[in-house]
Image (cartoon, rainbow, N blue to C red; front, side, top):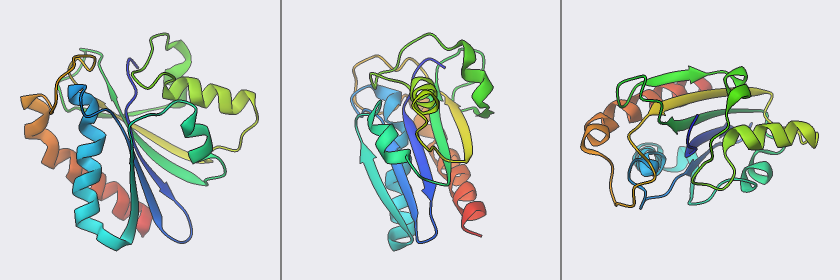
Length: 165
């Protein structure tokens, strides 16, 4: 996985917490922020939504002690059409070498939590959204990803509904 911007849904017994990580001036890196805005409007008071323009070590504090989480992350592999959503397993992170626009990527955070014995979500689902180059400084999503945004939001709603039931 090349890049990490994360759209994260953390469930607890009281309320759903939705955390979107991304950078709205790095083009497609802002997809999580767009999805979070749409879901915030859809669910209003049913979920707590927070957008963070960072990542890295912050994720350790945010995820510590949570029981289960769904993480939606962008990747640039060039192996799939833009907007393709795939489930990624933790074993897929074993060979990740490249960095993240968030200083420390999700694979690094997962490894560090394990090394430091920090309690991370026991149930973790990671969905990866194929995007275009994410290191280009520009506002807004690529035209292809912008067209697919309603589909991505619909998929995220489905995940939230499955977890809330």
